[in-house]
Length: 243
Image 1 (cartoon, rainbow, N blue to C red):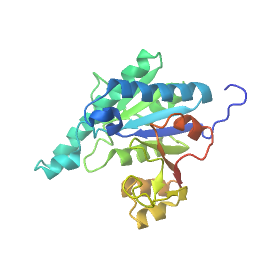
Image 2 (tube, helix red, strand yellow):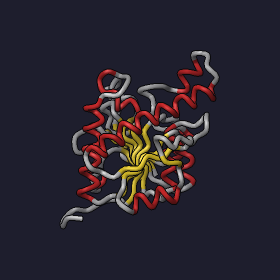
Image 3 (cartoon, helix red, strand yellow):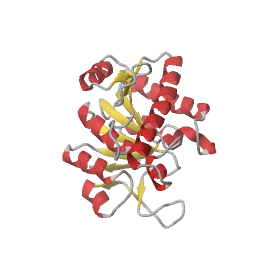
Image 4 (cartoon, one colour):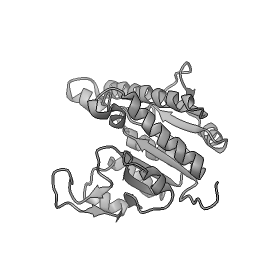
């Protein structure tokens, strides 16, 4: 790591929402947006020498809850959502590899033509060798969100923190939605129980509980703000930390 550069954590898991990949269109994949996200991650990894694993949601393509609400079987709709995360993960992997970065995509659903099978020890070894690891297909089970899979994978690989990157211009957790309530104030630090008791829908309760039980810090920040990921990993007070 270059002189004068400090890193806050050695290994992190970055949770990206699928909607971030959609850009202004609100659906599908905007290649330029994915390129920007990938370039930010690449620059930070190279500069700070941080091991980074990534979980990408699939909400820009399909949401299991939405499918269930429209009459589909919930389990079937969730499997469709898992496949949507694989599509996003393949797009991100492609951009990384175009930039010359070594990347491994691991899927919780067996699909050897496009991804490795998720194996915890193999994922850790990839990261130790300096490769990006992208986890797709959630936990491989219905009824669990990509937030939960992010918390699960973060604990499994021994990540120092789970970074939840938002994309709507909100740079942390607020007392209310700052986009609709100008009086809302940002909260710099919260406990896991604060999130659960106040029903602050930052991540689903299963993910928060899993993080609490394993002492995994969660940082909610605006991924799309220029320089935010670098600032966060360098130790600046970015976003809201939950611990």
